[in-house]
Amino acid sequence: MDGALELLRSLMQRGGPVMWPIALCSLLTLFVTLRKALQWLFYLLELRLGAQAWRDALADLADPQAHKALAPRLKGTHSPNAKLLCRALETPALPFAEALQAEALREVRRLGRGLGVLDTIVTLAPMLGILGTVTGIIASFNLMGQSGVDDPTGIAAGIAEALITTAAGLVVSIAALLPLNLGRACHNALTLRLQEAMTAAEHAERAQ
Image 1 (cartoon, rainbow, N blue to C red):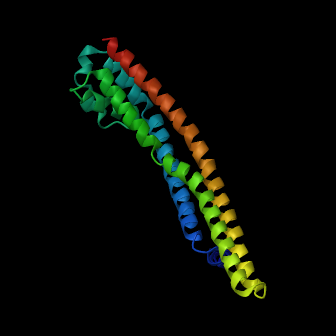
Image 2 (image 1 turned 60 degrees about the vertical axis):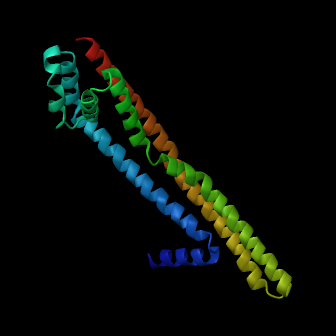
């Protein structure tokens, strides 16, 4: 553990100031990945736990008598779909179908929140690496201009800065790309399931 920390400290020092925003990108990648994984895990768990409640809600939605008292009964359920339906039923200013679509769109945006951060990091991290490469090469040329080739240590430090930042930027970009693509696939799957559930709700409401 101490060896890994010492290596990381050495890389941060040798990589120059550009390593700090790259390190921030890596921390953001880790934070967003863990947050989205937990969010989707709990969402799927709630869907499973609330499956029966959602089926009951669809049956009550198609019943004109049960429909009137449906919204209060849905507030304590575990089903995300039933909670969404409850919010739509409690929006009298809009027709049911429009309120349902508005709530579904809000839910889709909530589930996708954070993927844009990963998308930005995938593009930004390599660019920061290139910036570090340019600054490292500039530092090497400046040193060569001042002392010629009499100070190979300083020139090597500038080249090391250039290479380290490039490698670090690529590593962070790849590390963000994998959860981004997986997250997009999961988000699309959850969005499809949500659309199917809302379609079923619309059909049940029309069946009254």
